[in-house]
Length: 309
Image 1 (cartoon, rainbow, N blue to C red):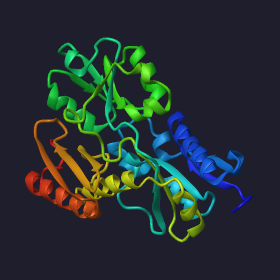
Image 2: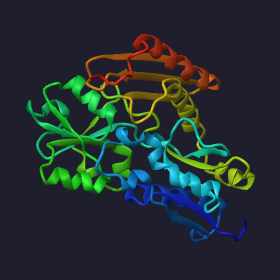
Image 3: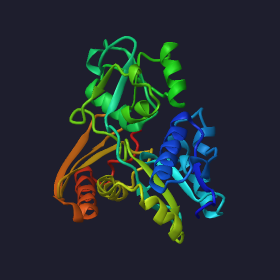
């Protein structure tokens, strides 16, 4: 592939493009090749087209990956760059996650023109979010607030906030940093108070399982600690059959030879929650994630993820 262009598939949002450009720049630096030899191919996904309904009503996470994965399978692109939290836990046959970039800040950011933190919002204030996890956690912490649906890319959500559609919103700190929008952050919410989504802050690269050349290429920029954490988190999510339909949070951290994990499941209205904490050797990350998921599944019982009437 010395002079053959490598085609990088991505969504077309500003954040997705920032992530694709970061991947391209890392690959160019690692190989000593010109960035021009890495072509960014923009692919519009179902999740980008459907903006009038909550994702939980129309198919969940796969809406942001389906068309990109189809391009991988038909060999229109060589690799795909995704936000890890958008990735379903089961991938199409023949595709694999083959690399992770170093993880950014995992925290949720609080954005508001009317308060400095979630705790400071007056009772009755409106919080906009498209995430069932954030919706459930806000309701759990502040049942006196109103939570409304808030779809769109980062820029459109910031515009809605400016227009007063909501008094506050929550976004991933990592995405805001990648877009150079840190100044929009009123405050960061610590993970002990607001556990992030599985995969939050991590960029992953997907490619064809039979493409050894691309696997070798992306291996040059692969970050092992992020991969260990995400292996645990995704195993946890897989057990719980997590998607955009279920409020699930989880965060793994590598500390030397140990990986530590905190997980949480919530009712959509925040009325009930169950937590789990686990740790163990990094070589057992996947097993730890599975066991943590099974533990919460037992705590929640068979009807926990059934939508309330």
